[in-house]
Image (tube, rainbow over all chains, first blue to last red; front, side):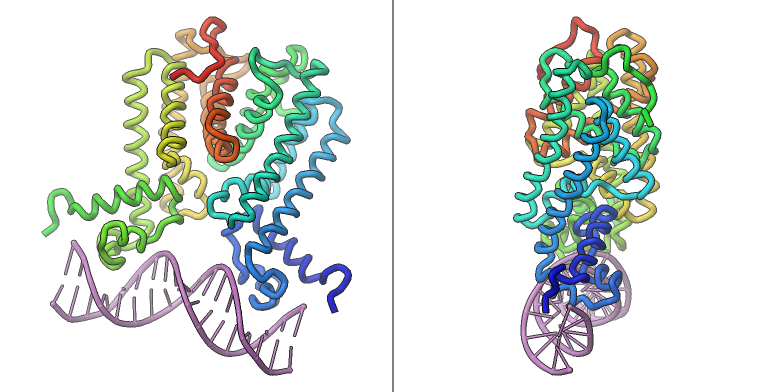
Length: 204
Length: 204
DNA sequence: GTCTATAAATGGATAGAC
DNA sequence: GTCTATCCATTTATAGAC
């Protein structure tokens, strides 16, 4: 019968495919890869996820949980807005340079045009989960005076630049190295930090 | 006999595949696509480029020429450093939003891990062509006082942040729209521009 | 240079037995 | 839930005729 955990194999398939998603992208792994990893046959993978798009939607859910868990962690431990942003950046750097993975959301965003329609729609929601969190951090930070805004810019515009620069720097770092990532992000944030708190290093 | 132009078909293959590269990436088109486009057969494509990696290397050459041509144009028409950077950004925006293409270099950098070894090495050289030009613009601009540097930053660091933020913003714009690209880039450059020249719009 | 024909591999997917 | 067997489509690539 169907176990209350919806079977161990199903969960293992999600875990393995989430890992491969972060390493190779959604079209970068096949049912054959999953089958090999678990020591079963392709047909058995189809039993759990009839179409690859079905698996893809579950991976979107997995990604949303992964994101929310990270943001909760940064909120709980970050002392102020800049600290929360540094934690976000350090987590991204660790994930990329130590574990040789990419953020699953960035991977899905990168593969966007090649994804099944249903996943593309889901991805728009996921992107907003990330954007909303960063906007919230900037809003609070500006209000508290922990961040300063250039003339004419609002929290949402700052958040968007922060996010896309971070993603761009991470993928450019595959060419130019991890210390350049830290340097770029410090340089990006510097104009928005109060003068007394500016450091030219990547806070650990 | 082999014509002095190395045959018209060969050149057409390069043109078509360069276009497809910018739209779909290197693994996003097949020899079948090229054959269909030219009204010939797959085997005839193989006659001109035995392996796809052979075509890939020629596309790297094409990309280098495309880059250098753009940079020469910006150098010839740009009045000063900020103007050259704006021209670079406007060209990228036009290419992306009007022609629905991506910069071939960015595409290759994005596909990096999936590329044949020989292309990966060539790509490192190509990336430096771009970086060196942007570094040159920043160096000259800082020296002329057309750009101002935050404490502790040099031309190379500024150039790297500029490049990767631009690439990140372009790919994020598929989700958030083209006006956000302009806003993000204005916001990025603002702290480096002398106070009198700051505009909060994307100069046309 | 171009063609037909074919190979060899891979990826997604289904039918039906156990 | 897992298996074998099979199908269909695609992609890269080669042999050899014209």
